[in-house]
Amino acid sequence: MYVLILNNSVCLISSPILVLFKKWCDSSSWGGDGKYIKTNYDSISWRSNRSQDAWLEYPIVVNDEINSIQYNWDEIYPGFTINDDREGNNFVPTYSECKEYNLQPIAVIDVVLPHKGSPAYFIEICHTNPVSNEKIEKLEKLGVKNLIEIDAEWILRQTNIPSTLQIKRWLI
Image (cartoon, rainbow, N blue to C red; front, side, top):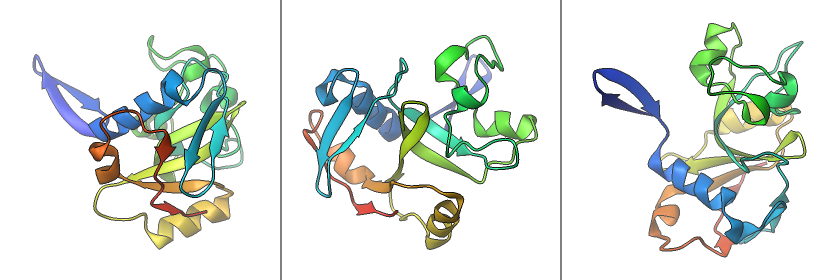
């Protein structure tokens, strides 16, 4: 998360690399309603059934009432809004919003690709430090499948939307 100050107001913005990767996921280059991309491991496909095909900075909350690994946030809280910008089928709370509502995020995933009401692929964009073994083990115990690490440098070297996604490590 980056901090941007506009007219003496603090705004939190996502990493430009995450935003670029999301743009690829949302583009028609990787398919229309159903998305598909070849990778150096295996192809991945997903159908979000939402106006967005990828979500940034997705908080993982698992407790007796909520499981954001099994269900998209808008399935957990359909029509839930925290502010006027967040309605309907694209709702994903920020880390701060989770804390404000006494939800304790276990982790925040850089990019999540949903498939028909559930998160399907959990993607971490790695700049210099790889995803820690502790985080991998914690997420695996909670039921995360398809945890993928992608090198930020590889993303930055692309001059167009790639036809093959270069996965650094398929972690789970």
